[in-house]
Length: 417
Image (cartoon, rainbow, N blue to C red; front, side, top):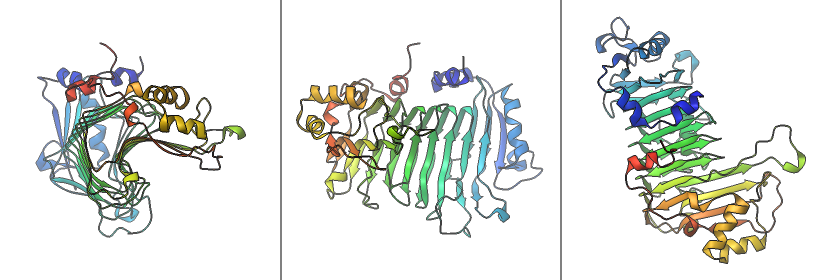
């Protein structure tokens, strides 16, 4: 069995139970080396970038669970290489049974930020914390902030499986270009954000709070808070499947006025023309299994009602092989005036969105004019077929209350055990 399947199909609670009763081996890190720097105690904490400290984690996991505690303080990153302050990149950590916990000493006390002397222009400066090729890891009690300083991604969890991010806080990241956090790739599976907060993120419509793209699976948000984003609050791009958003609060206070910013988006950007047969086409397709329930969606006012969208499926560009995303006027009329059953059948057969597996129920809306939309636009040189536009599809989604609790939500898309 592949490692992706081995770890991806197990619930987080299974691993937690496996470590019950086992004492974790503890390591301590700080913004700078403390004492002898060995990491065995708070009085002798290692510098948080110390490669020797991180090289000890996997051998320790062979025997017991491991906890790496970040001591209270400010953890600086800089784009000035002379300062020798790169982001923290943790690669290849994990064990099938013993869990690794990377935690701040207490919520709000461990703050990753950029050096105050960093440049204030540009687009894609360094972020703070990245996991790559890791599995069976918990990250908790970390804060990420850097007002107005340019950042590509503040955090990223790519090529990882069975990662729990809980009680973390991203705020005042107005310089973010892509995402406050991101996941990507077909080997990325079971990434869960729980009780996390995102506030005031983004430098423009290309900047999102949680940017998930290119085939990841089981990206879940449980009891999180999202407030004021320049772009999409949660994005599930290009075959991101089994997305779960449950018990979250989405709020726009009016800080950003971008009319293209839905709370939850499922977008495609197809700039490769199938007719020209490019050597390496990057065709994008919709994921179609989502659980979006018991959330609160709120805009501060009723201005620009056309942009007040809770859940958006969006296609830009060409229709890729096997799909028909750009609409003719006759097809557009089906989505405008057809019966619910006719529209569901059209979405399933023509566009590849199965409304039966898009579960949307129990949500609360304030000043949200459009609860579910399909939007298509002929861009990147694609020819319009005459049906470009935004069409209401919220009533086609599956409204059956299929889960009641967060635990049931986490288990919903899992295969029977």
